[in-house]
Structures are given as C-alpha cells and as structure tokens.
Length: 463
Ligand code: ARG
Image (cartoon, rainbow, N blue to C red; front, side, top):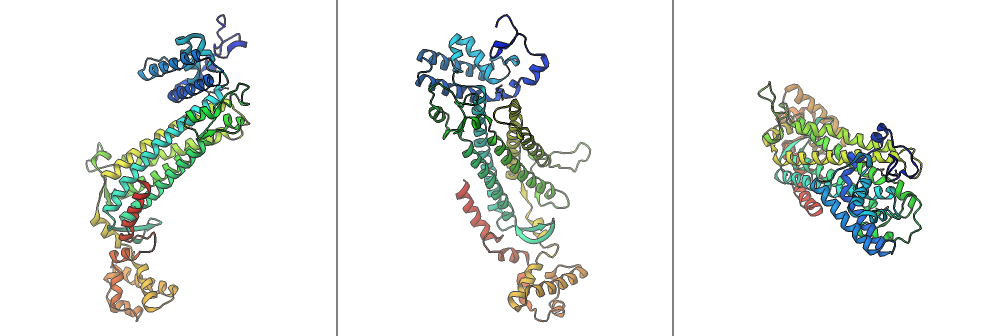
C-alpha cells in the first residue's frame, strides 16, 4: 500500500488515488468532525464489548481505549489535525489512533463498519441536540408563563383574519404559545424515544459472524436496545427526519410569534415594546427601533423547513441499505439544530425583556365592535331570542354605532331600543371589554381566572 496513493483505510485493491474533485465531493470531514465525541464514545463502547466477548485481547483493548482518550483530548485541545484525504471523522480518528498505538488500532474496526458506526454516532448526536433544545424550549415557556401570569387580566383585542374579533387577555395569548411549544417538546421527546435504539453491530448491513454482544454496546451508549434488523439499522434515517420535522414545526411556531412581535411593535399597534437589547436603530431614520431579532427568527424558519425538505428528498427512492447519498444527512440536521437554538435563545430574550403596553391594549380591545358577540349572547340569554335572530339584531346595532362613529357601549339605550324594544339597561354590563373577557369562563377560555389556573397547571406540567 505504501507504493500507491490509494487510501490506507480501503485502498487494498486500488492502484491510484482519487482525483482531486473526487476527494472534494467525497470528504465529509469538514462537517462530520462535529461527531467526534459521539464517534469516540461509540468506539470505546465497541472496544470494551470486543474485549468482553473475547474478540480482542485485554491488552489491545486497553491500548485502544487509552489511545481513544488521547485522541479525544487532542481534538478538544485543538491539537488534532483533521485530514480531508482521510474522508471523514471515523477514519481521521482511527488513523490517529494507529499513529498513537500502532497495529492494535487496526483491531478496533472488527465486527463493525462505517455504516453502523455513522448511524450510531449520528443518533447519539441527534439525541444530545434534542436534550439541549428541550431545555431551551422549557426556558422559553418559562418566559411566556411569567408574562402570562403578570398579564392574566390585561385585555387586548383577539383577532381572526387579523381583524379585531373579541376581547381576550394578553396572558391567554401568551399561554397559547406555551401550549404550542409544549407540543414541540412532546414531538422532540417522542422522536427521541423512537431513535433510542443502537445500530452498532449491524456492521456493513448483514450483521457479523463474530460473537458480539449488541445489547452490551446499546446499554453502554444509553440506548434502550439494539435495532432489531441489521439492514434497517444502517439504512434508517427516520430519526433525523423526525427531528427535522419537529424542528420545522417548532420553527414555524417561533416564526408566528416573531410575526406577532413585528406587528405589535409597529407604530400602528404599539402593543408591546422590545428592549434595546433586542432591537436595532436605523442609520438614517433616528426614530426607528427595528425588531430585527424577530424578523430574523421569522426568516430562519425558512431554512429549517428547507433542511427537512432537503433530507426528505435525499432519502426518497434510496434502495436499502446504505448509499453514500446518506452522508448528506448531516448538514441539514446540524443547520436546523443550530438555527433553532439561535432562534429559541433570541425569542426567550425578547419575551423576557418585553414591556406590555396595557393602556394601548385596553384601548384597542374595544375597537372594531369586539363585544358584539356579547350583545348577541345577551339577547339570547336574557330575552330568549334564537341566536340567528340575535345575530341579525346585533348587526343592525353595530351598523348604527358605525354610522355614529362610536362604540356599541356608547350608544344611547333608546337608540338600541328603537332596534329591539326588549333591550334594557342591564345590557351595558356585558358591553365592556373587561366584562367580556371575564365572562369567557368555559374550559380553555380567556377569562383572567382561567389564565391564572392555566399558568399554575402549566407550571406543574412543564416546569
Ligand atoms: N462518511 C460516511 C457517511 O457519513 C460514513 C459511512 C461511509 N460508508 C461507506 N460505506 N462508504 O455516510
């Protein structure tokens, strides 16, 4: 092998080395070096098992384990030199191990292939990413819960079609996002449970003739069990797809909240104020406070959605088992995880720091005849009117208020009575925005007491 340029790792039957462009398209070390810790952890578990099952001697096993620790330490200290000609993290680690301990290094790859090795490393990486994101989602929920609690009774307009619909409470609006991010956490955790099986020992695709113990390596790596089918073990990337799907949905949730912040901070709304730490100024317009972090969070959802699409498209149509296409699974996953982490941190900061403009919210809560439904409900409840008729009567009263340029609560009683004679002064009790919000006590409704209870329940559930 020394007389040819072929790879020392697989070049036995090769005369010549790869073309430069071949190396460039083939090498993954630039991005898969991020798997170094998982790769070394997997190799140590595999080595310990080979010793335990008598496949590798104790002496060689000890040399390998010590050598792997040394490689880990070299990588973490920055002393390690990554080589593109060694393609990927697996061969970079193994080649350095050979430099450090000599021939014994060559025994590590017994009963193993890069196919089960990379599948194992990547599962471990995604599992760690899920745990990190779960913690960040929890922190964002905590920020939302604090705002919800502080503003359980702060009325604001609730919207459908972005048209003022009915008064709701700001706390209730925050709690909607607590629910959404709770489901995101649930999706990540569900995916984690399904990914937590070990591919290690599936070898190239068929399993191995060595007397290995896959349960032992699975346990050592914190997996619940080994993957049951060796072909599936090396060709499955569902775990990455599920992770990306959960990440994309979460990014969509973040983007929706970001969009609300963009709307709410505009001069036409002024519902909330973001802190200086999360806004930027304009170089020409001195009055500007731009919600850049929110805008970028909104934008970056596009990347995460793209990452999911990218891997779905890589995987579709791949025959079993491993194909090199699957090397392209990593960059989308790394990008999605990184992007989501950044957006979650920015969003938690924005929410934590934001000032809620109660007076503006209250004034806006009644604009657009938002208590019209309360009037219709009153006609049903007090006058016994069928809802359809009540809807019609209320429509006429709204039209009158609109013509006079006032809110329905500002209309004179006799003006309302001219439309429906049964109306009496008690109607004014339901036309205010606070009364409207407070009356929505049905389970999951916006009443301040409900919001306080929901905050307590959520704190018990999530935190
Ligand atoms: N770098 C490769 C990847 O990430 C490792 C597996 C290579 N396997 C192979 N049969 N060439 O997919």
